Each structure stands twice: as C-alpha cells, then as structure tokens.
Image 1 (cartoon, one colour):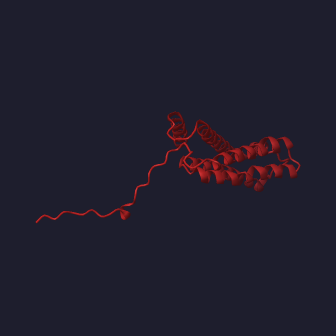
Image 2 (cartoon, one colour):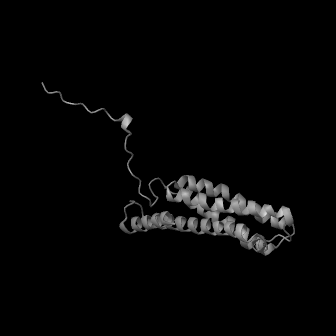
Image 3 (spheres, rainbow, N blue to C red):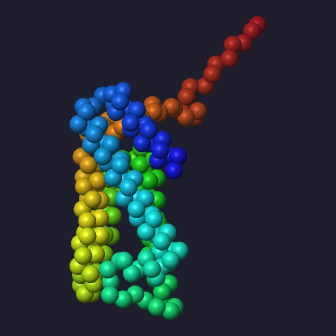
Length: 179
C-alpha cells in the first residue's frame, strides 16, 4: 500500500511543482488515470478476497440466477484468485511506472467485465447487475486504459531516473604506477 501512496504522492508533487513540464490539463488526466487505476484495482482485489473468504454470499451479487454447489463450488475460489490477481497486476505496473504497459493491460482486462456482463445476460441473470456492475466496470476500465494509452511521452507524473551504465560497460579504472 505504501507503493501506491508513494506513486500518488509523486503524482501530486509533480503536479504541484510542474516538474513534468506538461500542461495542467495533462497533469489532471494523469492524476485521473492514477486514481481510476487504484480504485478499480482495489475494487476488484476486494471482490477477489470476498470470493475467497465468503464465496456464497459474494456470488449472490454477481447477477447469475444460480451458482455451483457442493464440490463444484470450487469454481468460486478460482474466480476469487482471478479477481485478486486482476487487482494486483495494475498496481504493480502503476507503482513501477510502466504506464504504457498498464494501459494495454487494462485495455485487455476490459474483456473480463464485458464477458461477465454478457454471461449474466445470456444466462437470464439480473440485467441490473449485468449493466450496473459489469458493463459499468468495463466502461471505467476502458476509459482508464484510454487515458493511459493517449498520454504523450514524458507526460506521466512519475519522474524517470537516468539510467546508469552497468559496471561491465564502464571503462576500467587505470591505476598509476610509481617508479
């Protein structure tokens, strides 16, 4: 969690000091993308943990008319693990400053809530859940991906460090011989 706080703090500091060299509008877009990324990642991570801790009660809110029971209920654990991983991956990319990769990941991740919405609708589940939960999540994730993928190079609020050559690529020290 401290990495997320650090990333958001860096974003805030960069936006305040203007250290990114970008306009206020692009700083705002970057901050919005960061906030949406954190909120959606924490949200799906929470859902994943809920499926692992209380699968039956969590499954009731998904929107399908019925869920697997008995030994088949292990599928709920699989959903929990999938959702937890889906929440962790964007946070890792955000905290490491891999904004372009994060944008592509989120764009691909749109398939998950969109597929969930279609599954709920095609299996005669709750239309309200399909649209209000799953389709809305797909839309927010798509907007976030769009914000990230349309950032101009250098627009991100996370400052980049100059790369330092490795020891192997540096010239060897020359020692002075004394006579």
